[in-house]
Length: 390
Image 1 (tube, rainbow, N blue to C red):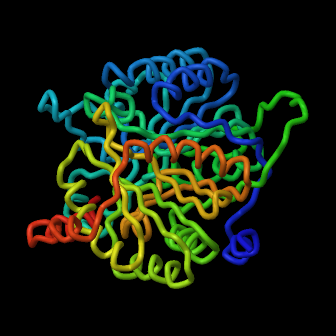
Image 2: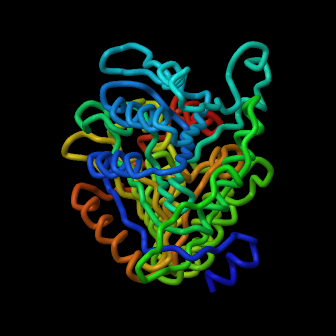
């Protein structure tokens, strides 16, 4: 049923190696540096937030070194990076573009927030929220991690708990390279072509492959994320988990929950404490009552190290899974560019569920009486603001 739903909704399918998961930035950092070092021809990276600081400098310096050695390195960074604030040090952090300028790394800024564009509010809501890497046209890594302070700082210093996965797939790499080049050409005076980044894959040993469906909400089609939500809330038969620290629900999103619970599906939402911005946490808590009244069970994760759970996961019946950077909110659903990898595989589902069980050890269930305490006027205003800006 999931495969038929995905095909009917034109979500493309590719053959892929079984993903390797990195459930923390401390696990992803050494692998990211190894991937950069291994690149022979090209590195393409798209991120929402890119800041240069002590924790991200190893990645940026490795990219610069590789570019200066002749590897084609292109990075797209959303203009929202200018707004990143270090709450511990109480200062704005420099956008990575400043360090990358004239370094050999090619950079495009997505939808700049500057000059006369600041008055074009509807257009400014269009943000590049995807996070993916393509190395040598066959290795793809993606997930929820940016290359910024929050993604790589220690958890006790506002660092976020997040996930990246890595696969080898020439088909997926080509598809995302096409998307990358289209996005680049719409935001840069220079022009690039997918032909500039042909696959340099070596002869591979036989390995188990699985189908991966790529939900890529691009420049034109802003309905892909909604289709993905419908996939999970429609196809789940027994159990659905939504791991989301930034779930700001609307009426239509609550109806998706109600539709699933009315069929007897156990719908579970895992939110998180310890956001670097208290407003984010308050806006999410405001939604708990609606979720509970729609039949969902809501849990709150509290990291022992005080890290915020930025990880995004949807999992139905421990087999159908979606990983990426998609938030369960109006912004991801309709406004931002988003990316998710979808699998229907028991082995991958088991890996995701094992990690979920570890998170649940530090989680508590939110009862309706507690959810009621979050329904104040001030919280409702924050919720309304973050529907567009969160």
